Image: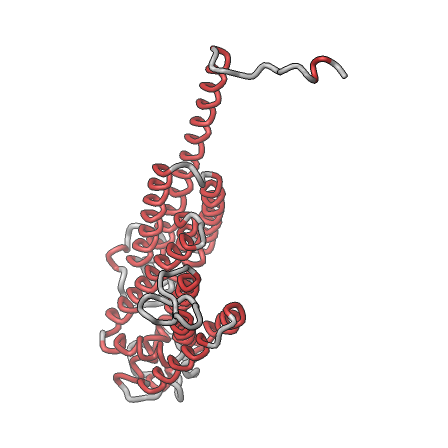
Length: 352
């Protein structure tokens, strides 16, 4: 055995060489942080610019990507050019690449300290909020579904026609009919009774008012979904700013979901409410039932039952929301979610 294996080895101490190494490492860390910050700023700029390009060009209309619509965005006409497939594809690809890079940078920056967390959360909220507002101000994008929602509402409210028995062709003299997609003009509504109730007020607002009402409904549902996403991320120990950007800056969510004012956002809100209720039920509280010792909410309510009711509410907007319920029941191994689901079903049936 050589003597070097047993003798104590010199270590870097507070001497001049150790101090220099520490300063150099700190400088490298700060430089890397500045590079990441610059890249993140570039990504944010690309996301905003791509969204503005699509919205401003879409406001001009006369494009397969911007369906014919009551003139809700005429105040933006003249700023952009007609939205063609080439421009849209470039904007979409640029947005998607920037979105993916921003997520990678956000994950690498996790754990950067309290001040860094506060800054990143502020920027995440500002970015997602700006994307939501830009899309709200623009025209309907990529889909005619929102005009079907309005047609079904006007059928029931203004014309006394049951949207579950007839398609929009039953009101072909109504002003909204010309905007309904050709594939849906003879199709009765496929949406649940809860969404029918939510959408009926749109039928009283006139054509432009109804489009703005549908866009505001989508925006409100989006805001609720993002708040619940933030809350769920915190409960699971994840960075809420990263979770917010993952959901709220997703190109499909922004350009298609919000851009088309889809009612999927309302369904998603109810589904996220169910997830949040289940996660909050898992957190310990100071109140226990003396007999079973099972954790209860301080108000005495069973959040599993409320979660089941929220899933059914989402399914009564759009049936695909029901896919969450069996997984919830199996994972929780409680029947209270099922009872809550049945209660919600009965309540909506009675109101309908």
